[in-house]
Image (cartoon, rainbow, N blue to C red):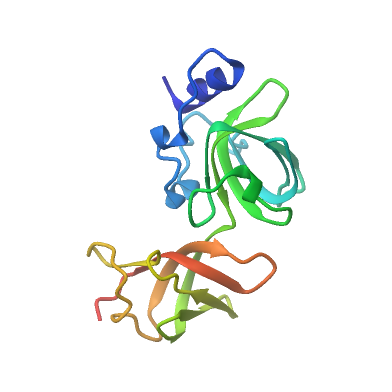
Length: 198
């Protein structure tokens, strides 16, 4: 049974509720992976929504997409929510950005199996480094990326992830996955990927 069939059944009562970890929903990088094999070229993915939260009432999130489409996102006991850590729906705030994956119900609501709150994925160059932060240059803008003790991981090429930032250098090109601080130029680093070896 695929994820969409399972989740629709769970929400409509024909299947047991389980956590989205069954489908790998807690991995923040999964927000940017899409299975488009069943979607016609140029069509919108019906199982995906993104935008800014406009309301949070009784487990239903109102979201205005970047394309101005309004979404209703249903959060159930089967939904995994990520905001640097797993969170309850009560910690999703108006103004937060989000990505959600799930299954569309007959009324158009997206029943979410995974929601990533304030997730950002940035390709940038390192402009400055300290033990507490990495300043990034992205399309002519400065981003302050905070290191979160015990949470921030760094990967260098094919090496395993670690908390060691010592190989990073000003000028290195990196990809940073993390938690955006809404309406600022700041983020907290979840994972920083560097192709440099020294």
